[in-house]
Image (cartoon, rainbow, N blue to C red):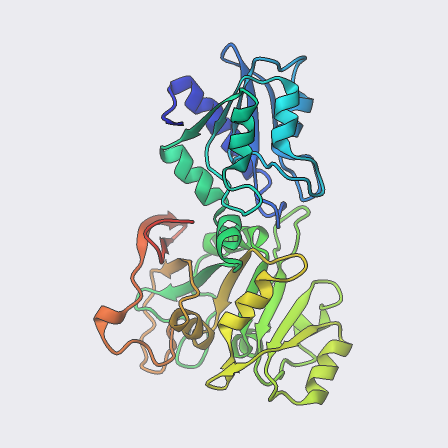
Length: 377
């Protein structure tokens, strides 16, 4: 049954969502989930899924609870799982605990669950309510990468770019450091901490010699660094290659790459995978299928550049979300590069349309966030 919560119940679900958020970037390939157990309008237990392999949120909340939870209500951000993986099914744990009601913020679209967890709870006599409100939207957004991969087998792709007010990502001489402000650059490191992979093209790797790591204080899981390099020309002296033994690094190349270059990269600890070519470039769609089907699947990819690689993703319809940091600067120059190049669309009516757009100030910059679909998965 779909419901809208009253005021105090809304606060309990907000608490569960906030708990889930504390583990962002730490649970993949599992979703982020928070749970709060309530009796007589008082929280008696709470928990969240801290990392893959650890207790799921519902079990963590039951263990945290003050005494018996029989007859209590559980507010959980995602439909409880009903299958056994590295941990047991949460639906069974809830049934055995004796709770009387479960309020779910968002259903789990993965084939192993997809309504079966809620059905199992109802069959056991537990009242189950599913939200239809802004909290439900927040819950779905919180796991947009998990949800897309569950439905399509492909990673969720964010295209991030920083540009001047006139849409330039570098000057005509190639200088790009720094277009965006310090606050924007700090936010990018927070984003990196939440994504499974960071992708760039060979041109960006050569021009900027980036590390593509999260450099926030404290311990953070480093994303898989992915370079689209059709000729396997990534320099052995690049930071990416020199640190490949410490931070996982993958180069997508093509059969046209020289074997000795491929061998040199592998010898330095870089994973190299040859894929089909489209117009001489690595097939971006094949790359996403490869990432999504790895033994530990990549659920999310942040595309950081350059404009040629971005064009291939746009033209292949692979982008789910964009985040454009716009700095209050005008660079000018007809040779200055823009975020998306390639052949472009010949007609305005054919352009990639964006939805669910919002904007916010980040220091001195404006951040525009939008999606390529009207609704999420």
